[in-house]
View 1 (cartoon, rainbow, N blue to C red):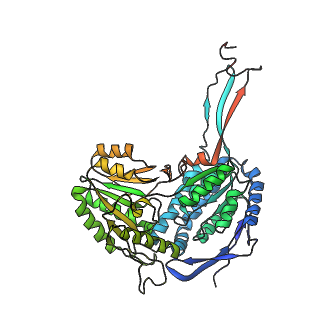
View 2 (cartoon, one colour):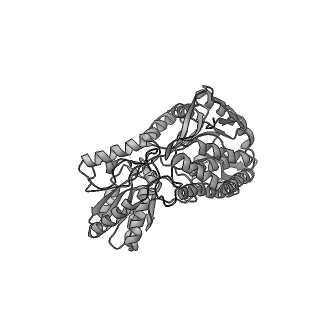
Length: 497
């Protein structure tokens, strides 16, 4: 019998106030029940906020290097338990095991990187306009933060938020996605084992009710959200009315450009990995590929041939390259986009169907899908599908490719394959995106660099790297006057008194 799981509040595992639970199942084998998790609501969130507020007074005063030591220990525990956590992830959200290991490794990398920030929470010292006066800026914690994470990277993305928030001295309420609550719970268990004090990190499971309670709670000072653009817009409106700090990382409609002078085999490999890695369920997935016309037919044949050969199935099985879509709703959504593409006149080159048969009957599997003959007005070009679907589009020149890339309402990740450094530099300058890869796919972020995008992808913040500290800390300017007399800034400057 599957285990009934609990929330984690003030260092204790507790049931939900409403005594309601939801099921967590394996998308590759839906009959497998991984556990039942709390369907939390406002009362549970209130308890978590109270616990976080209580813990904040001592946690914010703990020296940052000491906070870093706890995060470092968590990273070492993640390292020790990497295989266990990766296997749980493959069971819970379906990505193939080697990708799940990469997801956990990203959290390990983030822990090690962030732990070092405990000795690098640098401010600035500067000159004063007045005599015998010293000026500097320092980072201060924000307070109680609400973190809402998605299911596609159920360990990596929580690490992008939790570790930087902790090193800055904040206390947290963490709500993982309903599709991956077990990974979220395991992450919290590891931090508890690492020695995180009670109340510093609180775990609330649930769906929209729990999320709304977090966003609207008056004593939560910051919301960090990764998810859909629709949900992000609502969160931005609600936090904006409350003048609450808000960090949003949302959708993408990412593009890869392939020029005729590119290493073609490398570009094909990158296109296939970018489009179908994690079953296309990445905000950085390559769903648009612009190919210089003179090599288009060669490229098309190769990508279609490779897509047809991708082995789809349970991520635990040897040789499987692509796992299931996360749930039945998303499976139907992907298929509806494919039907829309066909109806609007796009040419279906391969895939375009829900996979049936004995190997797929208990899961949510979709065939790797490639379209050609698409136009900029089609939904499959304009909207994020979040599934194993990509479009191949011929272009005459780099300039045309960049114009088409920039048509998108999103601007997260981009890529160009070319041996011409001048073209590469123009792409870096002119593509409207937060990330640009040269001779690499649109997926593959590294934790010490900023992650995020422009336009509808987010609201201007960046996760990971040093920039994450700017989300989770406040700047305080400090002036120390040792003149022994009243000095009036600006007024006393002219006379140099």
